[in-house]
Length: 162
Image 1 (cartoon, rainbow, N blue to C red):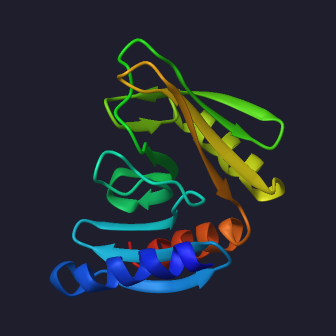
Image 2 (cartoon, rainbow, N blue to C red):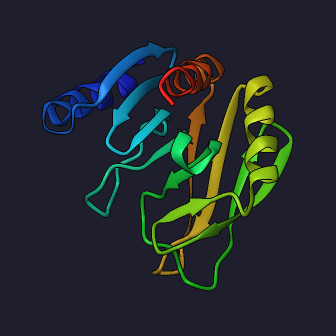
Image 3 (cartoon, rainbow, N blue to C red):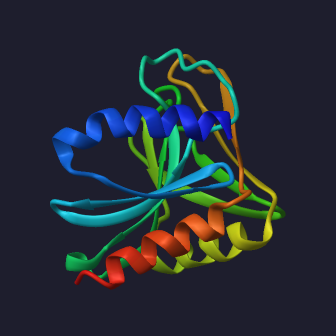
């Protein structure tokens, strides 16, 4: 909970400039609605790991009504990724290969997004594994307590405001 509280504090400081609406904190996850462009998302920070990159890693599940997108995964890695290395998301017993840029990763398609969200609803934790641009393997773990409720809150918030 302390990770989400710190993250929500950071987001609420920037919320005044972007008009981001907090929807609630659910376990280790927070839910938000951002009106321009309209999107709603559930978000969490990984369990305590110091980021060497200067940015804050996160995992989010978002809905973008104008794009007809719901339940889209986005992972911000805590380090830059080696270009030729895979990024794997492990949710409970399920493994998903993600597509990745330098420091961000996504599911390859909407079907995989849906499978990830289904897996998140029944697992206790998820972990993203990659190799840094310096060659060392790294991983970030996310507790999933509250994730399903935060995802639902974000989905409903965008569904009501199409």
